[in-house]
Image (cartoon, rainbow, N blue to C red; front, side):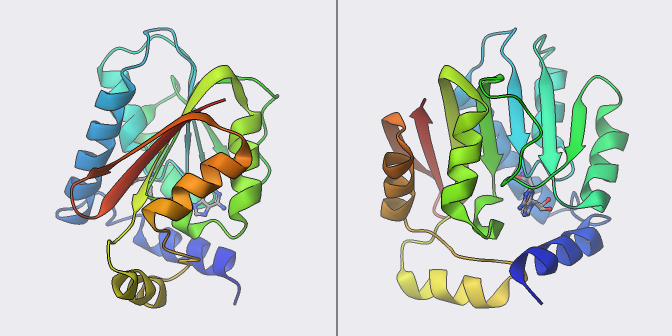
Amino acid sequence: MNKQRQSKLFFDLLARFYDWFPLGWWLRRVQKKVIAVMNPKPNAAILDIGCGTGSALKMLLDQDHKGKLVGVDFSPKMLEKARQKLGKRVLLYHADVARLPFKTGSFDFVICTEAFHHFPDPEKAMKEMMRVMKKGGKLYLADVSFIFSFKRWLFQKIEPGCVHIYSKQEFKELFQNTGFQGINQHRLGLLIVLTRGTK
Ligand SMILES: C[S@@+](CC[C@H](N)C(=O)[O-])C[C@H]1O[C@@H](n2cnc3c(N)ncnc32)[C@H](O)[C@@H]1O
């Protein structure tokens, strides 16, 4: 079974429990930190790729964000959970990051938390995320990245649908090779690297 299909099955099964403690609680902490660093203007158009059950978009809603809020995910069951949480104010799409159903230059911000290591074609995913951003738009990509290569290798083996656990340097190179400017990285705790860049 290919990784994409594994991911879809895995998250379709996990969707019911995804928001539960401790996983859901920990992931929401990561999303909260990303949103705090992003600090978007009230009217900014924001796209969440691999939005899962929609917790990051819910945080933006709860902050009374006025701009367009959109989520994309490949798992119908995760999207169902997101729909229950977000209602009609947020647009949700069942789509693959490699083929986003948006016009070029649609968003001020693209965020992607804890999802990138599931994307089968990282270069294509980066290009697509960049394509849908406005000129000057920003990508915030937070993903699990252990400091030691052995742990990265082990996680890759254990998590269903995991394509690759990237090092901090690999994320930097992906941003550079896609043509992002003003690349900036830092760790959010021990397990997560946040990489941001401007189109
Ligand atoms: C670990 S969850 C992260 C969800 C959420 N962003 C969070 O921080 O909790 C990864 C999500 O990426 C989605 N995903 C995996 N491959 C994808 C792809 N090719 N295109 C879009 N979404 C994908 C999965 O369905 C899943 O909901």
